[in-house]
Length: 283
Image (cartoon, rainbow, N blue to C red):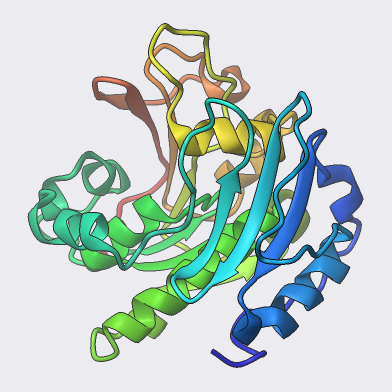
């Protein structure tokens, strides 16, 4: 892997990594072959670059290692009773199985954006991309998906996952079907006109349950925090000229911005609130 595969991005105007810095121990490690990339990201994020065998001395509080390895970039929790590593696994066995056997256009996210007979493809802006799972499903079902992610660490994981997906399936055309930009919809929305669908899946505070919170969500809550401006996303999306806006929410969560959708698709743990603005069928 060359030094240019995971370049550090330019910060969007008016934003700063400083406001994203987590209230926990956080450092970077790397195998020798990726030390230049890891060092560049350590400088960008202003966090320590440690030796690959570094282990934090015993102390209280949560701790995370951002690890560059030959298998990809991952976040490894390093505290007691921590979940396993988190990465954007778009090319692994689970992702391949979902693409092959997950239901295709019958998946709820595909139905929510409006894929159906007569609507074979859509231009979708996934404005809160996270680890890219829903975007990957939409792209594999025929959409052209532009992912947008504003948190630099999540963006790094997603950029690495997208690189591994393209390398693993070089003939699949992922370069055209699934792309990634760095920034927030609130800062960059004027650059993202012309989409058929705006897809929003903002962070939502998890509720305490006996079962463990999904590991990626636990890591995100520590490193990324809440989305205090989540309610500011919906109205700009509705005003963007898109034909449809779809908001993914926990099943019992309130409507984003308090705006009731025209309809919702209900799943076991989440729902898709749908705001149709124009026909998706091209005349």
